[in-house]
Structures are given as C-alpha cells and as structure tokens.
Length: 455
Image 1 (cartoon, rainbow, N blue to C red):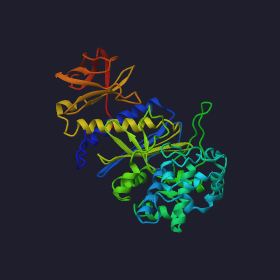
Image 2: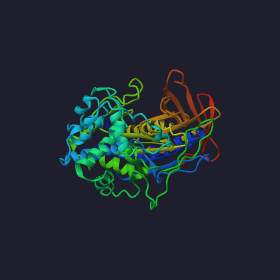
Image 3: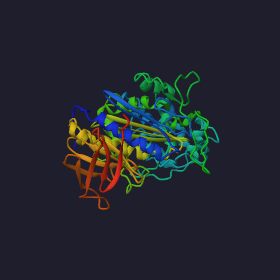
Image 4: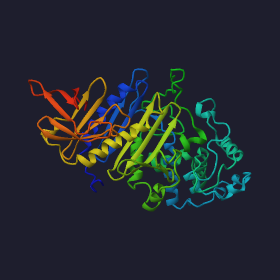
C-alpha cells in the first residue's frame, strides 16, 4: 500500500506509542545496551533514549561518530561537485590523482570515480595495517593513505561485483580537494553543514570549543566486561570514509534534505539510489543493494534509503522512507552490534500504522490498545479502525508472530489469523474491575495482565 501523496501522518502519534512500548520491553531484556532513536518528519519528530545503569547515559542530542554513514555524505558532496561540472562520474581516478600511475596493477588506471563510489573498483578494504580501527595506532594521514593504496593489489575488477573499500572513500576525499583547491573539511562546510545549519556536526574530530554533549563509547563485552573507550579520535585521511561526528538530529536533517531533492538533482539522485551490487550481507538473508554511497534497504512495504555505520564502541543507522517522508536514525553503544533489529522493528510499526491507522481509532476500540504481561510473554494489542492485531514485544521482530483479532462482542475477540504454532480460532476475553477498567485478559486461555503504555 502506498502512502498518501500529501504525506498524511495522522498515524504517527499512535505508532510512536507502540514504539515506546516495544523499546521499554527491549530495555528490560537487553541490560548491556544503550541506544537512542530519532524519527523525523516534516512536521515534527519523536526522540527517545534507552539507557541502562551499566553505562553512562547517551541521548539523541549527543555527538557520536557515525562510522560509514560518512560515505553517504561524502558521496553527496561528490555528486554536488558533479552538478557544478567540477567532476564527472566517469572521470578516471588516475587523471584526478596522477600519483595513482605508480600503482603496480595497470587495471587501476581505468578505475573511475563512479567505481570508487559504488565499491566496484576492486581496491582493498583498508590496506595491510588496520589497527587504527581498534585505536591501537593513529588513523592514516594522506601519505599513509597513498602507501596503503599503492601497496594494495586490486582484489577484484568487476563492476558487477562489490568489494567494500574504505581506501576508495579516502581517495574520493582527495579527489574532491584536487578538483576544488579546498580541503575536505571546507567542502563539507560549504555544501552541507553551513547551508543546513548543522550546529553540532564536525568532520575529522570534535573541536575543543564544542558545546554539545558527547556520547560515551564502550567496547563490545570481552570476558563479560565492556570498558569505556577514548573518544573522540582524529580520523585524518579516513574522514571521508568514517570520520563524521554529529548528532542524530543533525544527521536526520542531512538525510532528509538529500532525499527531498534539496542537495542533488533528480537525475543524479536517481543514479545514486539505483540498485547496484549486493551489499556485504549475503543476499539470501537480505536483499540490500548499494548504489553510489547509499544503501537501498528493504522493509515490509518498500525500500528505504540511507546507510549504516560502525566506529569502535558505537553503531548507527539512518534511513529515509521517501513515500512517507519519514527519516529514522538510531545510535547505540555498549553492545553496538545489536542495532539492525531496531531499524527493522521501527519501520514495521510505522508501516503497520500507515496501512491501518490513517483514520482515528473509534473510542470503543481505543480501550483495547494495551500492553499485556505474564510470566511467559509481553504482548501489545494494536487496535485501529481497520485492523486489530497482537504482536510480541519480547521479540526483535515483533510482527513475526503477529495475530489478527476480531471483536465479536463486547470484551470478546477471536484470533482469526495466526501462524501454525499459535492460537488461531481461540478467544481473547477481557475482564473488568468494578471501575470498568480492564483488570485481566484470558488470551487463548492464558491469564495476562494489562500494563499502561508509556507515551
């Protein structure tokens, strides 16, 4: 189902109430995880932080390193230079950076800017000495970047075969500098941070005069323990690949502007997001595609566009749904590998409400919007005008075990559609106390108790 063309977001508020209920449950089940969520649209935003006592708190207003999301922003700057005629996507890298002629593999002389953007140059990921990612050595400066490129064979040379490369994006930053005579940092200010009024966004490092709070950074648990890591750190010549420091709010502004045509014209934008080679996740698991610095990420209704990012101790993701004009940004620390499910779950909840909650829920149904608990599970009944469903808040994928309910009498529902191991055809009975409030629920014969939603 396609969203209304005027981006009717009447369903947004009830959707965020369900998101709140889900995140509250996730908090109780994942004590080693801190994360922040920001959901932005043209008329407002939802922002939420979930923090556990094991770590210092983080919020959506904290500055963090967004890792490889920097590639989407670098690609945006490159395409803006293409718009101005300062670069061409089919320009040879060797023509822009003559020192590439020294490379021992002559195939490198035919590599184009477009291949660097799409990770199809065949260039190695990081080179032979990569412990900067563990903060055991400084990130490479420009001379070290040159050494790493010249010492690295082309692993593959096939424009239909992706080979992810941070070195490639380091080269893109240098190409932008060569084409304009300005530093990468100056170009990012000119094209992105200044026109978009990004008050808490920096490239390369966080300056000493920064006034915004900085996110904590924690290692993944080793021997059962995480440690706080030094943060921030200078990313030097790898800044175009993984060296942007920003907040979720600023990141949402950039992403929203990019996907609403405010930065890159229609034809170049279409080329940017067009499906390309598969991303590094095996395609049998998820059909993620990589365009020019942008991931095309499938959700239940359609693809959304953005990028994921990881920097030691932090992980982030930011994706835009063009049909609803909603941008979802997430950041995590503590156990940062646990983040992708948050993106999937939030889009699942938003899109369920987009399909079924465009009209206000009648009052006689609204009272059934409940969180139900017992010793075995936590369920959320979502009652809308068009559909009543029950989802599992315990799950990383809350809609996998979705059950469709039908109100057949006051305080009596029947489960009309459910998976084979569930309770299709059985009843859900609501019992009320003397004040008329729902006190217990017999869900397919199992007692559950209501919990108030947190708005």
